[in-house]
Image 1 (cartoon, rainbow over the protein chains, first blue to last red):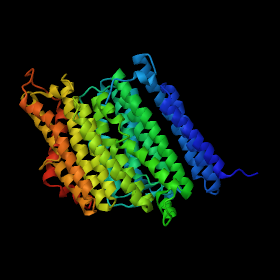
Image 2: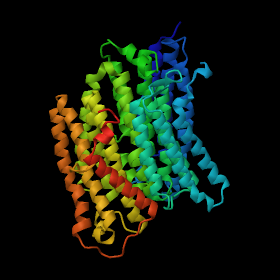
Image 3: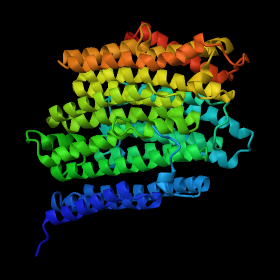
Image 4: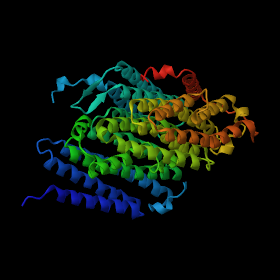
Length: 103
Length: 469
């Protein structure tokens, strides 16, 4: 049985939704960071699936996915460093406690 | 790909910036602490050489690297604006103690500039995404560089909102790729030509708009801007107020009119909505601010609103007026930030009331600040007036008279908060009459910007003839 393209897209959309809910509802900065990683991987599934089904002869979609992985890694590096700075200042990574600036 | 066919000249300015970024970073490692002070000057030299490189590419229209990278007039003008404003920031902070080591600070700034330059020339989704990340990742670090609670909080908010916006942008790009089977802007345009507006295309446009809207701080994706402008170290805030936005607007000008030309009425309407929301939110919230940097942050949001009018117009005249106004705005905003830098360097606070009687303590700083603020309002004869005039005139020509009226109305509202700063400087007597001294490079930088703001207001054709308006 050949798996149709739409199945991949549904999985990707579900992952993106899970990540987005995590970003919106979680209070822990590290958890938010990992929710964003899930969203990035949803985009990667899209890229690879489209690349396989829409343009089987070209590999630009798969190349894009590789670059996204590299960028995701550098984002985590910078992000964890910033979270660490926050922790050193207020001994917490709870975003509800990060409230110096109001509006 | 045949490597001998690649025209390396096309990315010469970028290569120069990359080279100097690496040199400055290595300088931090190997130079003695006293020699490290010269790294700022080296950065300045690098930026000026890159400017020469951009000028040498003037009039060149080329697409290189398998359609990844394109050089055209818009990209060159925006790169030049970016390099000029960054050079002025570097000149301003030459004698200022920066928060990190000099080498780290200036190389991070150069890497961010490099990303912005690639963004201005990107003609491919992959290139655009990588360039955008290269712009913002060093910026996150720079914002956090003071390591105190305020700086860290600003950085965390900037970072979290930034990566979510990036991911949404990326997802929108993948949908666009899936619909067209290509990542190249021109190929996407050809593939979309003549197709009706599919729901997937609409979703993709909205997602891309969210991602790039964050970059340029358009409402409702503006929440990071006031926090970052207030919380980050002042030299960083000065850089962020001008430089990286050039990349955001360059991406908007290249992606939407080129790749998504067939859906023009849809995104033009969406940009008009964003413009109105940004103008009103920015200006009305700024009225309630007491911190000068936060006030400038909301003013930046409002100005993004004015600039998006150019995209709502969606024709060449609109884009060119937008580029002109962007230049004029970034000069004035940068100048205002450098004045704040000059005063905070002397221990003066950042509240509006701390500027009381500045004209007695430093007449030139006060007059420079007043000129920058008048230019931001759009009072003739300063540059902001000509910029707004061309922008709103382009809206009127495209039958968007209501948008022009909203813009003028908002300029009137904005007068309310800019004038409180001017009133403090000239009409309130100072608490202490100590003279505010300014380091020479910073003074020179502020004076250069002041001269440019006055010159472009009196004689805008000097710049308009360059961008062929």
